[in-house]
Length: 388
Ligand code: PMP
Ligand code: GLN
Image (cartoon, rainbow, N blue to C red; front, top):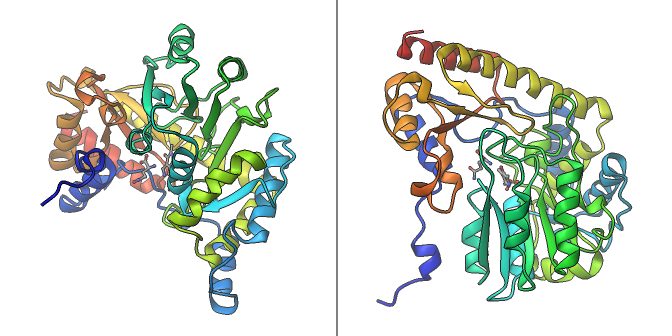
């Protein structure tokens, strides 16, 4: 038999699937894969349910329901001050994952260089490589995860087609500030490169941090692609409704990819997402405040157990250093160990690196977007196990 595609065949199963399966097998409290246990806003679910029963459940327009595209444009104006033409500059996708695939397949020509920042979300590298891109990786170092400007500048060249990055950033919970975004924007302008920015956690942001889209910086309106997800903004990760915003020219190859990947996304879920994006500011403020409170609850609990908990400025996650607990083994060993022996699941941070073996191996990522009772039960189990 002929061999299948080598890039895809060489991949393992994603860490989220592996750890969630292990969590189910051991009935552990799953703080690995990032999904809330809240049901999500009722108005959003009711809108989707109502549309399912009474709406038009046939192929929606390829770019997405007009109501959702309009809502995405209004939302960009409200939160980022961006003027977006909903007809030519917004595309609805089946999750941010499809959006990322559409952008990478639509923009990369084989041999193009693509700058990426480690630690990174696990779908990025396989798709960049499958699209024929040549990854140029730049690493953020814990515990500050600050942007290594010299290395980043050195990673850019005239062969750079684009930089793909994520803010607020999974897994290290960093939020890029204006100065860092300006530095990236300057490199993009100087090297005639695009910036594809994964902004799925734009509303899960804490303390005094504010989400800034690189698209709003001078000269970036034409060069930036912004990706959002209803899964994250409305605590409905199973819906897989994403949206891409880009200038009309840049959108064309991205939309061409979407038309042959999925073509459309379930219309009732698009309708629900439109309702969500139009919720008032109070909804978005409360979402961030609730998540911040959960972050604090889990972080305090994990510190009391003995973990060294790194600061988390956004996303669903806290990164922890487990060495103070005296565990001798890798992060993968640790996450398996606590799943099986303590009944709590986390994910190893080395899974967010191109070469896990050459990555830091002493960090576990815990997810806090859970009910208080779930977080407390995880802390109780860990305290008992580690004797605190
Ligand atoms: N990007 C990041 C950084 C993520 O954490 C996730 C996780 N869901 C995604 C993209 C994918 O989003 P979606 O579920 O909308 O496909
Ligand atoms: N984004 C989620 C996380 O980082 C997982 C998404 C997935 O399972 N593919 O945990």
